[in-house]
Image (cartoon, rainbow, N blue to C red; front, side, top):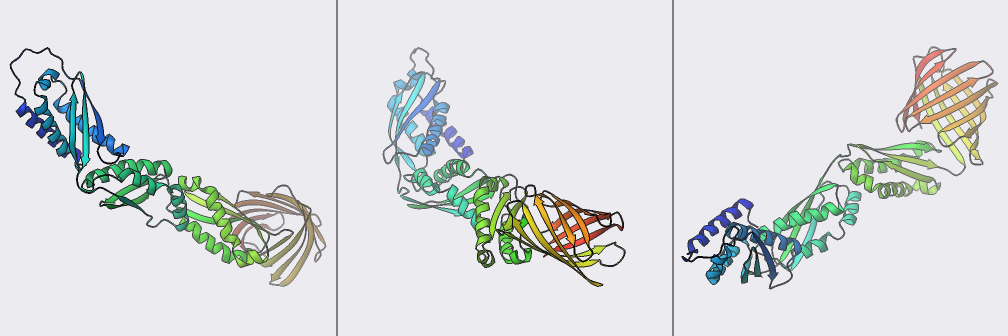
Length: 433
């Protein structure tokens, strides 16, 4: 299609041409001006695509409005055949790729232009549609392909039958109608089209994210009953895929939350360690500018955990330790456990045995006995979201209270602020093994 400014110039020029042939006879005619122009358009070849037909009709109506509206219909009726030739010539100049093969004018207050168009030269017989994904991750490409599963068929319906010579029409139509098609199926992206016209036409569609964009993708362990280091290989691969989400529209990930979460779960379940020990993997995706995948990696009956810590600002000895925990579920909410704590300086071991009762997934209460020092401890632990936690340890034997506020820096590192009514307060850096 010609650009709008060029089209206006052509219409103005052709209007001048028509004015040159309007040799009005000196007769007294009843004033009956034309107020509106409509078009009845048919193609002698294949059925013209609706979007193309609308554009052609709009162009012809613009011609009619410029030339006919405001003029008295009787003046055109006096030299109708001559005016039909001129109008046909104007339409031929404006509507590229087509030629007028028939024109009949039905003059009146509302004038109807009955026009038959025939394509000139070759017409588009086949359309290939190529989506250019650029840096979009493979998983998102699969989801986009599902969203745009009908795009090739729709672009073929849109362009097949158009004249090859009307590249301007083809590109203009594909931009406008094609964007509407993409927006309906893929509203989170803007689509840009490039058309290589020929009997076999290729449409290149490039996608540009729209709206809020994911800046950070991360994987967070919500609950694990095995040492996290055993999951390192599986989570490293999955976390790399989470990073690949960066740059995608947030709304796109929201719409495909379940598919992406399931994809991540399947990826974790393919790891050999997860398969060998038949771990129960659950994933929950929280889309946003910072998109987070929460992961539960659980065994059926056992809880195996390990950690090492370093105390900062704590006076006295025993500022470093390695702690191992082995628990077994009794029923659904109760756990009996054994715990061993090793202090390298001075070399000391503490051995505990105890019980915990869970109230949901984020809160438990329990007791444990220190066999090394003959102490009884009362325990409370509460998680707040995925990063914060509170815990309380009451040593009944020595009347010592210890309160801890924990913040998880990432999956393998936690920092804890500790207050002890006997030893004061300090920071503890914990490595989650």
